Length: 248
Ligand SMILES: [Zn+2]
Ligand SMILES: [Zn+2]
Image 1 (spheres, rainbow, N blue to C red):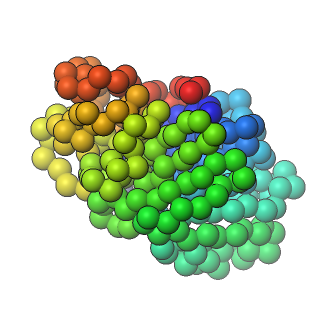
Image 2 (cartoon, rainbow, N blue to C red; image 1 turned 30 degrees about the horizontal axis):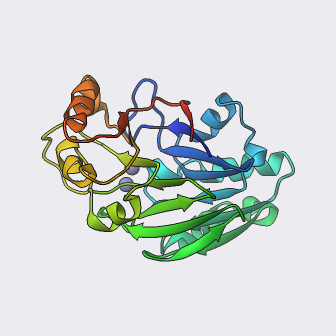
């Protein structure tokens, strides 16, 4: 399984990090998890072709996770790729329908199959992996996804506070990609700080944690976050930059 961190940033712009996006390649098939602003260009910069991406899985509908979805659909249409499937939480179908109503020329040209999924639901994705959903704790409905291929398991948290349901999916996994929006002891709800996350990954059997969805507030506090988490976590902890590739 190959994971490319396309965008590790958030809604507030910052140098080097565009909004949320993550490409998973399993048996040479590609799935895009979230597609915030800047991700379409990162797909190009990563050496991938957007025309190879017709399956998108959305954690939730906040703009920093969906802003480039229509841009990706249009780029594919311009290259004669018309069909896509978008998975997402409740509300995804209405969200896309309303956008298509605003852009009737898109509605005529592209064909998008929307699959709404719910917490605890399991589904088979592009015939190469099994996915299980869990509800996040966020200001809007948000899903985390556990992706299981033949022998590897990756969990992507989406936007959330650390919580039992997501950590149940992550127990013993090869890779947990968890948001860490703000630095240590930052007062916050609906997102994650290192001190909120640490008790959940202690004794979890997770092999490696990758912190993503970093607000500009995290700049200069990356090492502090890594050191703090490593104090009580046996596995690896990383803060990926945009375009970092990890193979597991
Ligand atoms: Zn959000
Ligand atoms: Zn976000």
